[in-house]
Amino acid sequence: MSTIVFRNSQEAFIHKNVFQILQAEGHEPLNASRAADLAVETYRTTAAFGGRGGKCFDYCLGRARLLLLPAKKKAEKAKRSRGKAA
Image 1 (tube, rainbow, N blue to C red):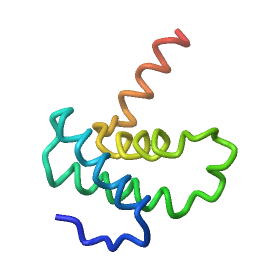
Image 2: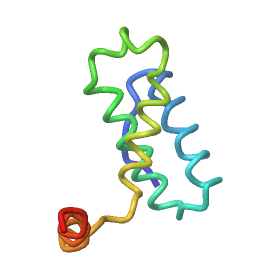
Image 3: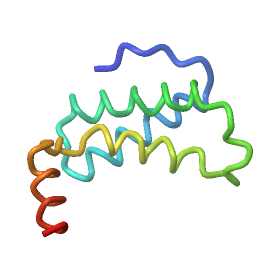
Image 4: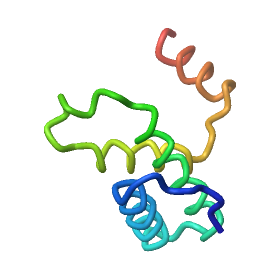
């Protein structure tokens, strides 16, 4: 599972709840754990949560969901942009 060591109870809360939400959405446990680790790292490295009005958890969950999105190929993006220009 996770190899991350929590520094405080907020990190444990973020990891546990992000993991549960992502599993409920149908993601594999290994991927959900990896995304929850990223959410904790996001919490650690983002210093400006004071101005977000209590949206820290939502921001970390959003970053974890971005990790699990399927990667879009550059060719598809270029094709779409060429289609709009024509």
